[in-house]
Amino acid sequence: TPANSGLLLYGCKVAADQGLSISQCVRPVSTAHNRDIPLVSTRSPRILRPWPADQGAARRRERLLMSQEQLIQELISTLGADVVLRGADVPERYQTDWSGTPPQRPLALVRPRSTDEVSALMRLCTAHRVPVVPQGGLTGLAGAAVPVPGAVAVSMERMNAIEDVNARTALMTVQAGATLQAVQEAAVAAGMVFGVDLGARGSCQIGGNVATNAGGNGV
Image (cartoon, rainbow, N blue to C red; front, side, top):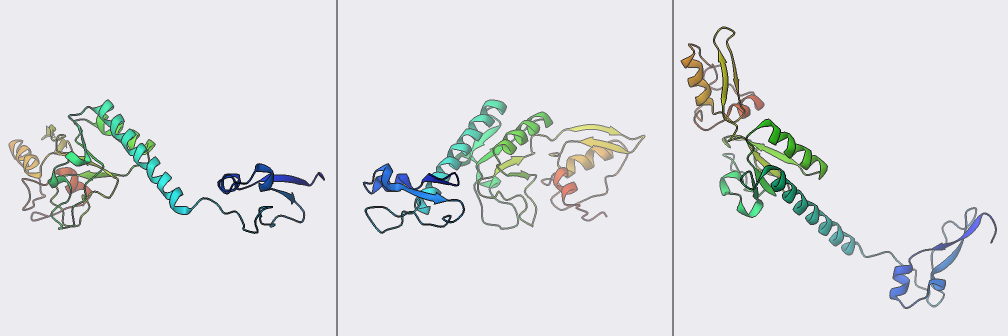
């Protein structure tokens, strides 16, 4: 064989399915002249073709499902079964919001209790390339809190503490899941007023208010 030529084994799996030997699915390839010579069986004029596309799609879906199951197991192992709910166990209220968007069951629902748990969740989802949809009080009208297919929903409802109120500096430190009403009442107790007010004050969460730049009645 010349130095610029070689033997290319191509389509041997398909050839084997047709009862051909390896020697019958070998073709000479000249890097200078024969790049585009189609592979043709010595027994048949038919060109050997790659695997059907639907088989490739089925394999990709199988790998995706395996990866999703592995993610759920890792989430449960890292955060605990009381923090992570599988998709089939996720209550309906976490599948949509007040926007009227059709409900979508998430891959899992995670209800973290600390920023460390949120960080662990994000590390795992990033490693598995799974999207994350944060949820507050689910009172939004734009559908932003509705899970997308294959996503992990993250409810901030357990991170609802009022950590600090400083009347001298007029600053409050609260967790994202604190309701707007709880923030208002903490401000009043310290002799201050929190200016944002909404009709959903008892349900909406401050994290969602900040994320959407909500103003409401008092601004």
